[in-house]
Image (cartoon, rainbow, N blue to C red; front, side, top):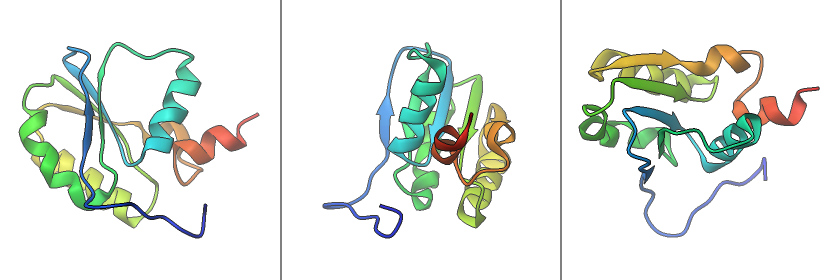
Length: 115
């Protein structure tokens, strides 16, 4: 719902390990599922779903193992802050993938509205 976001219990990051040196980081599950829909298959990379941008600092220990870090944050203030934090603090190659959906709030919004 665009009017309600909730969860049961404490929020935590979710990781999916496919034994890759590339990781894609998403703010939410809906963005990850949108990514899979756009790709038409599960890419051979690892995934981190933040479930809240406030959890971005918890990813730092995980990111040291990756040579490529692709970010799929929202195009809003929280997404900007999370992206800036990771660019400044992550040891690795950061790719800000928001360029692909720069006119939309997030990857899911882009998928829903593309032709």
